[in-house]
Amino acid sequence: MTRPLRILLVHPGASWSTADVYEGLLYGLRQHDAWVEPYRLDTRIEASGGALHWLWRTKKKTQPDLPKPHIADILYHAGVGVLEMALRLQVDVVLIVSGMLQHPDTIAMLKRAGVKVVVLFTETPYDEDKELGMAATVDGCWTNERSSLAKFRAVNPQSGYLPHGWHPGKHFVAARELPGDLPRHDVVFVGSGFTERVDWFNSIDWTGIDLGLYGSWKGLGLNKKLKKCVRAENIDNAMAASLYRRAKIGLNLYRTKMGWGQTRQHVYGAESLSPRAYELAACGVFHLSAYRAEVSEVFGDLVPTFSTPTEAAALIRLWLNDPEGRARVSAQLPACVAECSWEQRAATVLADLSRLLHVAAA
Image 1 (cartoon, rainbow, N blue to C red):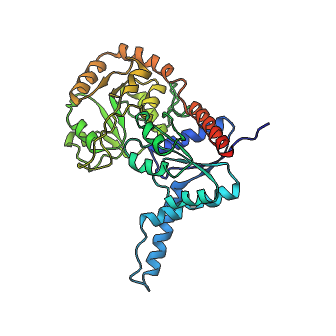
Image 2 (tube, helix red, strand yellow):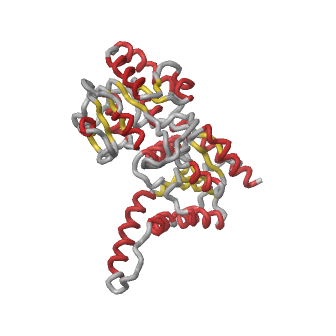
Image 3 (cartoon, one colour):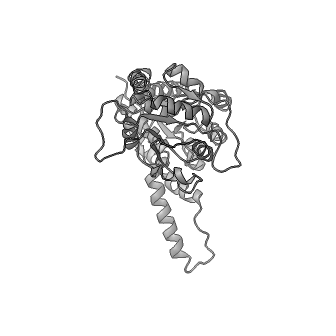
């Protein structure tokens, strides 16, 4: 009997959306009885930052010219343990989620030591240039955006497209709600307040609509009325799912620019669904979505799409006045993503890893 692959799964370092991908993949791999050892980069970044800054404050009393720790110093200190753990545990492969906070020197040393390294990129097309640079240095990778796959294969032939997914332990229709009295909004959106999203919400008249905004929005330019709609800062995925199930309408907005701020490059031609799209559907939540090609491919006409705030505003008021129609659509949504959970995605990952390691051995 063939032994399971030994995988060191590296956390993305961030605590929210990319962490949800990590948690989903970890769950999925374990459902297939894969041997997986987590490397929690998030807690290590926190510990490394605290330790290096404490040392700097202590030493600068006698060495006033000592430079303050840079973010690169913290990321190296937090991530270099991947090398030690990979060698100590004799893993077959190091699987990094996102990779945007992984110091490149660690990857270089893993390769020098003969350890196979693969990355699941989660931020295409928004951080595509950084991802492509990393893809050229590793043994294999997946991108979450299918329209970018050709670019990845140009720098690394062992590249694949892995769509996002949903977590069976968090995203479900049954009303197993979290403790506490969460609100039941007319419309809910969970996500970060990128400039284009702030402009989008400011463009709509929300009079008479109970809007719930969750995530990082404070101080980012929402108008006075909308500031009152920000109910909480960053929340975990389980709470987001509970808010989705309680809402009449969920919103799925896609970023249209790279990074933060006003002077940024626009994103064109993105086609793939976000994690939010799968999670809303798995929870049986009626939702409206900004246009992406995969929306109609996966959901048919069950998820109405919009291209402008004006179109979205009309759809919101139309569907708020049609509870029977919302219920009819909601009942059909889970079936659309039944084969798209992280358990199925993990099966793809394991099959791709087996092929990659077989090719490397040959």
